[in-house]
Image 1 (cartoon, rainbow, N blue to C red):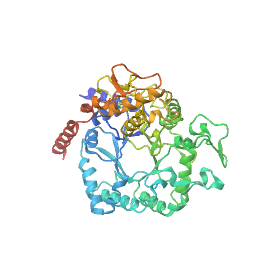
Image 2 (image 1 turned 90 degrees about the vertical axis):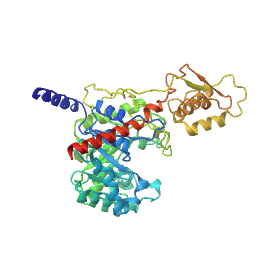
Image 3 (image 1 turned 90 degrees about the horizontal axis):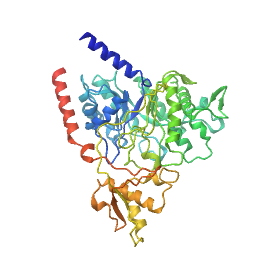
Image 4 (image 1 turned 135 degrees about the vertical axis):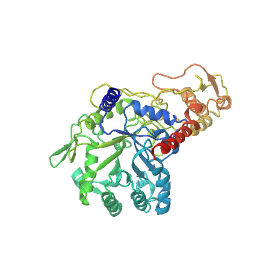
Length: 477
């Protein structure tokens, strides 16, 4: 028995040693055909990912994480923040979504994310008055139930909550955004009082998006011709500069040593001229070795806790920010790796492991019918297909942008057909489409076959998770 335990311990230590210390991922689920939660959890294990950040506290997801040992950040969506201003309601939420999983063999919850980037300028102050009270109530509820020392409430904030003055645009001059400076100071004070981290989402890609004047190489980590000189400190990438601007902003309100957690950082692979596999791989190949080396930034040396965004592509996300929004995953919609990324950051060639036992619909595609004669309704039908299917890969600079007119129609029709689970009626489009068993993908444009819904969503995982939790509570409480 002793030898068996020893070899298991050696195996666990060896697996954990393959990967960047503390590296986490964001697991979003806004997909028409999501992978089964237990499939995703196994994928996390297979890749040695020890931390995951969620955007809710969905029971099927939480049940799948039970017993995994994976550290979890559960979340309260923005549309529930006002409700959390009622302390009793916040306590109910904590009891339902935190304490109910707090037992041996349960879910290893470390953080509660209160909202998600609630102070974005595009929200027009919708959550300005409800975020801090929600944060206070959730943390206080955690404290009351005896979990406040081990589980911390935090607010994932966009990097637009801080800035440097236009006349001194260097990281050392960082301050909080003037219109929310007082509110941010109160939030920081409360986080500090409860030993909770400041959580920030940093996106070098967005520095490039819509700004052709931004120095392209500055979004990556392999050097620039003209680094930013901040009183002798040279910044060669925007990630470090952005992070240190936050360090300075925190210092400006008296909390320069507050722990900082990077809640989201990543690079999309489609939906924009700069969103592609090559740029994503370049970004990660620069970021991950720096995280693995634990060198930190000029103003905050050492370990940085980071969650990559994201784990899996989500074809049902809003594209209001841009078509790229559905393509942030390091894995495709079906859990298969997009590129050979060394997640260890140490050149150990431990590449991504794809999801296992994924079941697909039949090998059939919907394509433009070349025999169609009345094309007057083609544009309307393409618009309809793209309203309910994901056509973001057809946009300018995207992976399927080089298709001809018939190819564009085929792509749109097929995306709708797959979303509709290959229903025969979903491939007609007033006689403009037909089903084919020939793969019509091109070298640069993938015509997908969707996941079989009977295997992607099932009551079985939730039921099994419930039974597991119930049994564990009986055995260990």
